[in-house]
Length: 202
Image 1 (cartoon, rainbow, N blue to C red):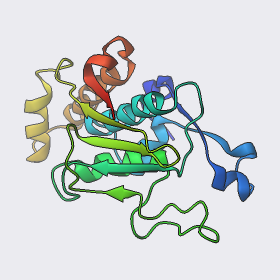
Image 2 (tube, helix red, strand yellow):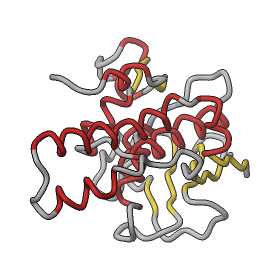
Image 3 (cartoon, one colour):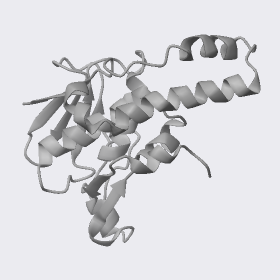
């Protein structure tokens, strides 16, 4: 399996998953989720998937500090509707990391460690995404703006040619490289994360 080398340079997200511990999947429930795994989930790597990943990373840091975030004990709320824009893509990535599901999720063992009914849409908020700890009811609201990392000016015309079936194989490859170059800048420019990701507690 080949993919851009920078995928492996992105900071992974450390978690503790009580359900996986109870059922013997991961020792002590300790696990990590990488950007590569989120790309597999989404089926692609783009600024939206990167932003969802960073919102989860920064949001969980704000909620848990030095403690390991408790996967499966986090409510994920979205400001927009599930079918609006890229809301569904963002929520899929964040809810995967948080271990949250909608009505069809795991219903728990005797009412414990359930993953269902932890995702909500059309929730009024001052941001795009809200993460809430079920144990303390503390929450953070997050927004994402990658505009300070612009795309290469050649990307748009190449995309246009590719979408019309007019691009050569070399031009298609070049478009993919330029596309991922911007994603790389978003994910590896750690000094800009606090400008791209707005985190508000409460």
